[in-house]
Amino acid sequence: MAERETSRDIDQAASDWTARLDRGPLTAQTEEVFQAWLRGDPRRKGALLRARALSLMSESAQALGPGFDPVAFEAPGRPARSPLSRRQALAWAGGAAAVGALSALGVGVSAAGAVISTERGEIRLAPLKDGSTVLLNTQTRIRVRYSRGERRVTLLRGEAYFSVARDEQRPFVVEVDGRRLSTAQAGFRVRKLDADPVDVLVNQGRVDVAGLNLTALASRVALTANTQLVLSGPTERPRPAGPEAVTRELAWRDGKLAFEGESLSQAAAAFGRYSDTRIQIRDPALAREPVTGLFAANDPAGFSRAIARVFDAQVEQDGDRVVLTRGGPQGGRAHQEVFVTK
Image 1: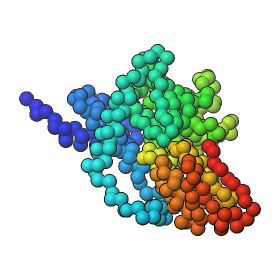
Image 2: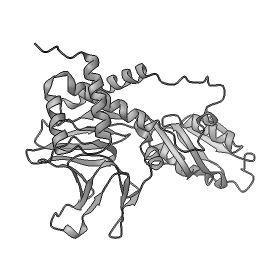
Image 3: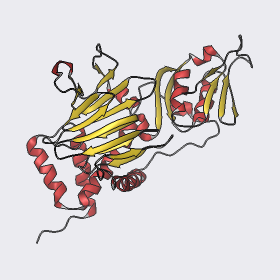
Image 4: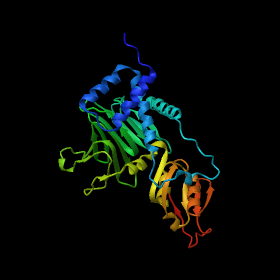
């Protein structure tokens, strides 16, 4: 009689499979082995979900570049934080998996499609019934419709990262602003914000982009790993995205915002997506200063304190406003406010 696997054995196998999936699509033979492993023990799917959640967190914690020093952006007087242990990371991943499993109970039960959403500042992991997962960023709303021939998700607003389980017979399709993003297996992010064109970033596998009219073959574009495409019109072209750029773009999956040369006003707008607190800049020259670093998305006040130290500015908090000034109350020039409301 074969000895029953221990939970430790299953967790180790799930970690190994996650690493193989992260390297790219499986071959047909390896995919059969993988699916057979998933079917072999009911505990394995949960272990795989925990391992994938841990992988998401670890990936977004990679270095942002050779010149980045997170210590320079700590709030004054704040005690140093110890590194996250593997045990703590696994506990976080298990919690995320449990919450996600509860979220999945309603997915696919309605003919009109299940709607999953997040509020301002909320990030939510939702496993889908085929083994795929979707991580929803702040203020995001999707509709999920699965059928025998297609796994379809509509991104209604916001930003989501899709980690798609392989299925050659049933494509995974994301519909957004009149486009179809189709794949058999991939990891990719789609962002749809009110003021900006739709932005697609693929970091694993391949995603085919086409219009909803599938007969328009000439308009189809294939995106491979580490490729980004802004859906801005007929002249749009994919462009490569290096590993550091991908890490910055996906830092939100760990509750972070990463900047590499964006203006302070752009950074303030990004914080406005995650908090009701608004950053008000009373000096146009300060608003144009470039910002580089990694920050907690839900801490605009801490970000503003770090900015004040770096750019020799003053920071005051007035209710739900954080006010940045430089060179005295008039900013050293005619008084003008830059108030980010996005």
